[in-house]
Length: 49
Image 1 (tube, rainbow, N blue to C red):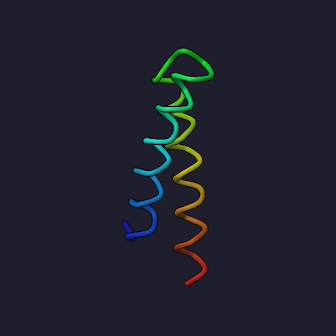
Image 2 (cartoon, rainbow, N blue to C red; image 1 turned 90 degrees about the horizontal axis):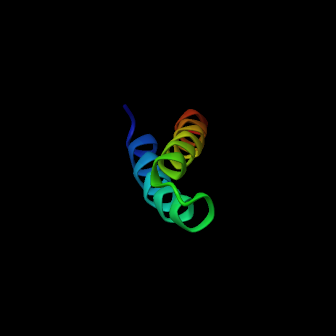
């Protein structure tokens, strides 16, 4: 895996847990959403190089 993908996945998961607790009252939902968005952003960054 490329480095931007890992970084975006980790940051997305961290932000997702925080937002999941604040908005959905469930860290699991936020983690899943954040990880998915982070993976998409990281994959997009990796393919541009």
